[in-house]
Length: 240
Image (cartoon, rainbow, N blue to C red; front, side, top):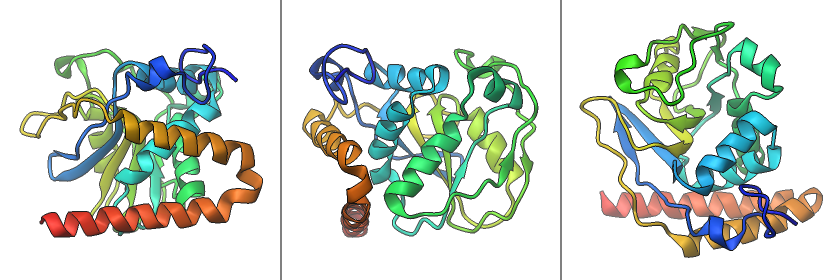
């Protein structure tokens, strides 16, 4: 089996790629709570690239597994940030919807397609804050209070804020696969925790097992995820 990031021997990631993964703490995007699976460096960048441009659903599954611990214990639904129609057709995949679907499979949370995307918008990847722009997303359905906006990468937060602006309703939060660490003015930056390699190895080992036995392991996966979210919630309450 080959690494989902670099295609070298190793499953689901090779040792070299695991060692590049870094966790990030929660932060704020304006008044909105934001969580990320990984810092946008090393293997995390390649996993996102392979999902977006090589249609690697398995890369998306691995990213989703890392995102689970960032879900709030009171989350009600998952709302993907959609890709533009032109890019969906060009690359044959919508990464936000893939991540939301995988998270829904792991947690049992419903996926709500509450945000509609324009046909096309100017590419934002790699642009600095001054050259990013508002995207004219639209609301296409009711989004429940407590829903979580799902996207692949957060840099300045411009795309996430555009999607949030299109949604009316109660309190929402944002969960992304990776954060590049650059936030909108006034928000706390994401800082590297130095990489929790042990925790990530546990995640990849578990995911490897789940991928191979998935038809027979869905109930086990759900129980484990619910337990992990409960522990995280208890820990947060104790620290507040």
